[in-house]
Length: 502
Ligand code: NAI
Ligand code: CS2
Image (cartoon, rainbow, N blue to C red; front, side, top):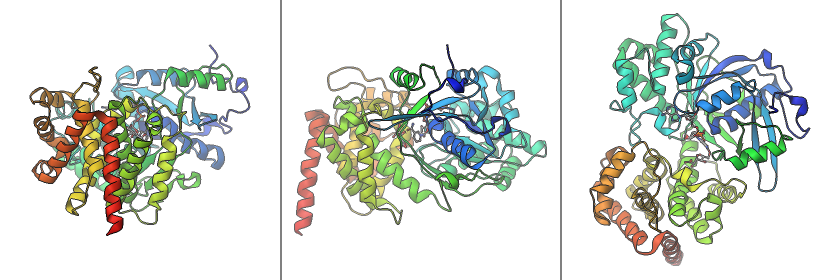
């Protein structure tokens, strides 16, 4: 089998490293070598090395899952392909900034900790999905009852969780007299730096208060807003990449949309790459950007994912073919998410329009099932926080309520044709227990709302909220998802019309 290490065998159209890879230093350890990191952060680093002589190289680490991806890049000199999927055109780039790759379960934890204790390492970046932080999604605090955290409290030197591994590495660095590093989350959470800080400091404090103090003084936890739609890789994606690489196989290839955005809180204790040279925005406060993206993009994504899956649409681009879904997603963004945002200087109507255009990209084939995954970790920041704002300001939130109701219908486990739904969620058992113990209808809604780690304590006490979700849920049961979306649009039009008259 031909591999991408043979650059001269690649077609001229494929971009490849034109810099000296041996001159790169491993200054960033990245935890979570998934699809997104490869198509986002690694591409920024590649452009920096290619065009600006950057020597910031990577050690890639997977702690949970992803054994194959680590094996795959090791087999090809740590190279991998990133394809950009425009509607009518694909472009491939071979990325060369990775110097080393490790898997804790395959190689053992010791080499992972050793990599994290390399004096040259200045940044540990993370994309381990929301559930990898072992936090309470409703509050952002460490979940001390999480089985991995329980394990790490009992075995601080052989941790399993991401926070546990970071704490162990920082302890070793302190004990060896080495400086700390910055921990940069690139996961889709509001104030992802604060969540990371909470879980790392929470765990360190429970183990050794003096270590928590040392980390607090010497490390930093910059927040980031990250954006690029990178669907899970399919055999079709790999076949298309193979064709573009002139028959060369790259099992570690990923493909994402052309759009890319990265806003980073400029708060690093041991230096950072000059990301601003390749289009990243370095700012003092990321929160307004994070909120905008999480509510307008991810909020509408989750809305489309649950209603789309229930309505029989396999991909986001299929939802966009249904004018009712496109209209409802757009209205959700502008009527119920935009008013809740703090961001200034952004044309939110243009942003909403550009998101709908991105969703229409038929090359993406982004599965509604993939986005529907891990709803317990996503609902708070995408749908519930904006609802809290709208409730406090006495405003309507029919679209968001339908999104929450659709999640409830989805986790009920049966689609509209009576086929079982494969639910993937770290709280699957707790959710299934609520479903099993409640009758269909209002009782089901109340049972699911009692899941405190998702809904907090406040929402179940709001009569307006419970009524809105119960009404939306009843609509889904009565007429199905497509009809519920159609009705939502009708209702929304008549409300807008009467607002315009007054
Ligand atoms: P993926 O499934 O390709 O990769 C997931 C990565 O997380 C793997 O490296 C896996 O080892 C690691 N992981 C999973 N559970 C873990 C756990 N409990 N502890 C430690 N590591 C764990 O997913 P992908 O597409 O890379 O997305 C990952 C995250 O990146 C998302 O959850 C999101 O927060 C963020 N993101 C993804 C975007 C996308 O379009 N794919 C865009 C923007 C952000
Ligand atoms: C999606 C995101 O899977 C999901 O939940 O909403 O991964 C989305 O594709 C990205 O945030 C886009 O930047």
